[in-house]
Length: 280
Ligand SMILES: [Zn+2]
Image (tube, rainbow, N blue to C red; front, side, top):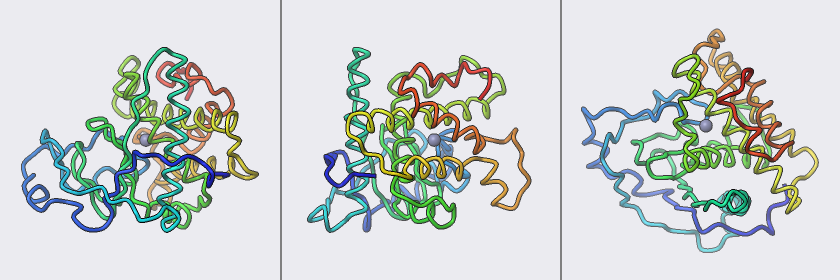
């Protein structure tokens, strides 16, 4: 991916290292409902979330401490450029719909983080919290994506960020809690929500390529590889269990690849209506 000349986003909230979770909050949530945020996680078992925040407001006791110079922190720099590109893309797409795009914040953390959706550990994987309109990302996930999930490459990482931004877009458009066609109950709604976020990630890639020519050879394959790697069937098989489609919360590898591709090819929101799709 050609990214180093790209604009950097101002919406990175860097909470890495030191003071991540205020102790009072981490210990005080016992008895509160553990908000598992209804499987908004990227591809992991929500039970790894440490402890919920319930209805408490998220108390952010950390400070934003950007690194001294962008080049000293290439991983953050990359995330910042991808986030900025999603901002530029979605701002323009919202403008065409006569709507205003409100940019989300992206919180970088290590180990554990407090969000309006509760306290989450790194093992949760990247996630979006609609309660505070923030994306949460531990950069260690990108290393896991390359090694454990065999999906290396910068565009694989960009897809992950774009997927979480996709959830933010859903949230703004009122598509996050879509219940129109809960054909198969909670799991079905969750899968349709996740596949739509994949499709929206594809829409971003479509427009970013059309207007800024960011793609290099192999990039699309990297994103598709990542989409496939975090399919529920692949994850369940990797965990040593049997594949149980009725427990899917994110969709199969094949479905995730298909919806990302659909967004990538069309670039149109109307082609991402997973909630109405007869076939996923
Ligand atoms: Zn997701």
